[in-house]
Amino acid sequence: MEKIAGIGGFFFRSKDSEALGKWYEENFGVSMNWRGGEGPTVFVPFSDKSDYFPMTQQFMLNFRVNNMEAMLKQLKANGVKIDEKTMEDRIGKFAWVYDPEGNKIELWEPSEESK
Image 1 (cartoon, one colour):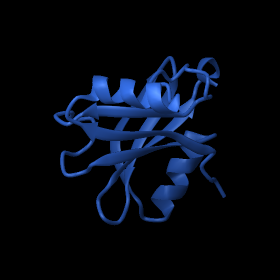
Image 2 (cartoon, helix red, strand yellow; image 1 turned 90 degrees about the horizontal axis):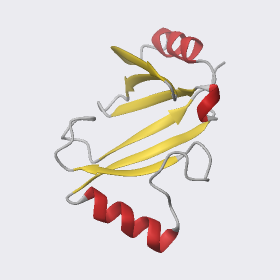
Image 3 (cartoon, helix red, strand yellow; image 1 turned 90 degrees about the vertical axis):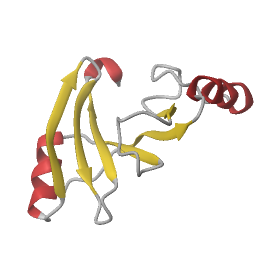
């Protein structure tokens, strides 16, 4: 059975994402840079106008997975709603699924470069 490998990130809406990101970095040492030294976990304020996740959703979790293909196959077998869109770039593979209340969740299989 596939399980998540950890939290890849926490994304949330902000009226001034740059200033809020700087505040979190200055006050808590949480880097907004995914290569910021904390490992492959990011904590990122998004613009409150961002369409990266639904406007009705205040935050989105990003879960790290070890095997995207196996995880998606397992979720599909469990009846989980899976977005048809996927993405792959230099930091890894991405897919999106939805919980039973319609909240969008991002899955991320890190590339070797981003581990």
